[in-house]
Image (tube, rainbow, N blue to C red; front, side):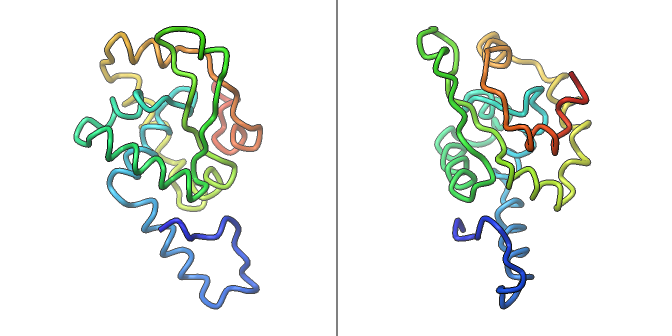
Length: 156
């Protein structure tokens, strides 16, 4: 599943549709799809593992963790660290977010059209104090190309 090339080389690909099929398979698996939706709904599009798990209650933490690893290996997501939070009890310091490649793929597969709905669901979902604390915790900025693709600057 994670042997999908990071960048398409259409001129060298024997079957460009094969790459599309692999990406569709990668993105449409139930847990991975839910992870993507949880991240798209997050106000900063950058969430801790606990935040993501909160929005996927039907799956175990282990399952969500395994699928996060698959998305990281496929370069759809990256782990963004915020070392200042390491010293603060109760705050996450590792966050999952889209890579530039991942954001481009989401655009190519029309995932970004659902962002307003995902944000509305996220905002209306009741969250325990721990998840509220995680959601408002300081975090690193996403790379500018990712911010631009996800149109994060338009909302601030």
